Image 1 (cartoon, rainbow, N blue to C red):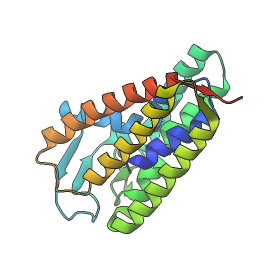
Image 2 (image 1 turned 180 degrees about the vertical axis):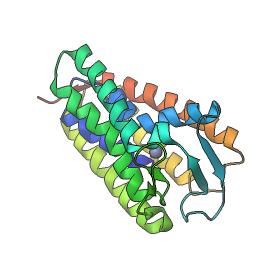
Image 3 (image 1 turned 45 degrees about the vertical axis):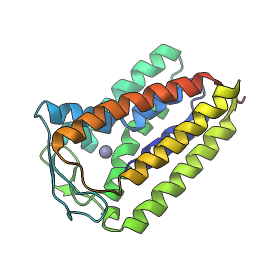
Image 4 (image 1 turned 90 degrees about the vertical axis):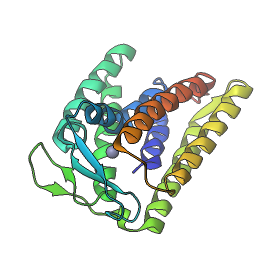
Length: 216
Ligand SMILES: [Zn+2]
């Protein structure tokens, strides 16, 4: 899943208005931010296998540290503790923990059975990616709902608060559409786009969120 994770991060702004949506995205996307780094280091493995699912050609051979349920619970607990400490609000822990673990649940729904429960476990996955229309309908509906909840939970302080947010939404849709194009040329390209794209989207989110105030 791709834009569905951003949808969850946007919606979480309502539950944790004091956290930048960039932090909420980092939590919901923690698995996919860690993953390209671990692939680059040779710790996790992926290969390009066109046709392995209808929606994506990626064959996730092994990714126990970024994508097992157990490790995501650990990362979520740690990330949640850091955020709760920074804003001095214990409730924030639950929001951040739930976001990090939500990544596993959403990927479990979309991936073929390649998602580990813990390193070395049997792998599970419901395979929504076997249907291109099903994947698009679910993710686009989630994303629109997330945008709507975020837009209602915050108010633009200035023009940038409206325009930078609208541009972000358009960019994410365009990136999602580009996903439907030809498969990536190499694993190195996936890693590069994953790391650079993740950094750009987080900075962009930080920027527009600073130009919007939570509605209290
Ligand atoms: Zn993922």
